[in-house]
Length: 39
Image (cartoon, rainbow, N blue to C red; front, side, top):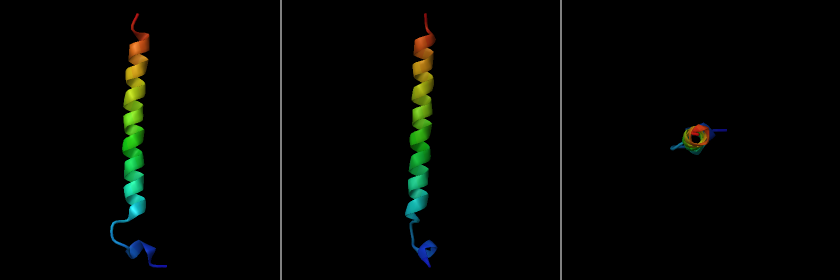
């Protein structure tokens, strides 16, 4: 029951890594959309 007393909080690290991955994916998606919209 004292899992939240563990140092490091692996869940938080995983969440942050997921956020950065999602952010990178969104940036790549925008670049692809821009490249496709160029005549």
